[in-house]
Length: 67
Image 1: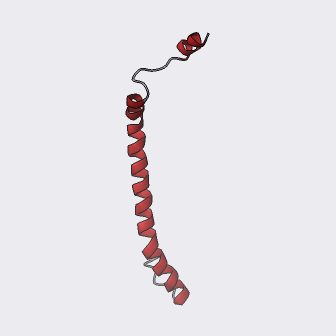
Image 2 (image 1 turned 135 degrees about the vertical axis):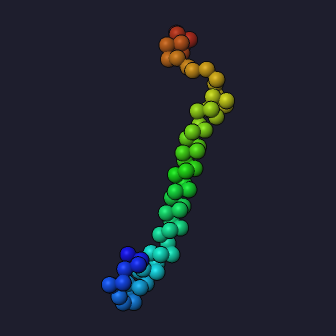
Image 3 (image 1 turned 120 degrees about the vertical axis):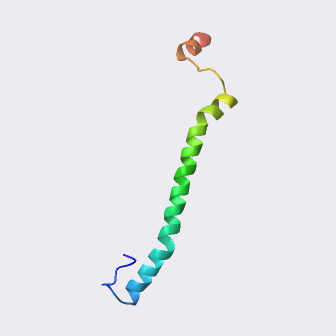
């Protein structure tokens, strides 16, 4: 789209300019967001264990404690 030379005109030139100026930064932002979500998702289990409990909770034990 941005390097196409067949289409011409002010509207096309304006659209091409907009695409070139916005698409790459937008794509880079989305990539950064995805990388950050992956990082936080990988860190979640260890953070959860350190803040809440270091052992697994078993449903049956909880039910026995409630009774």
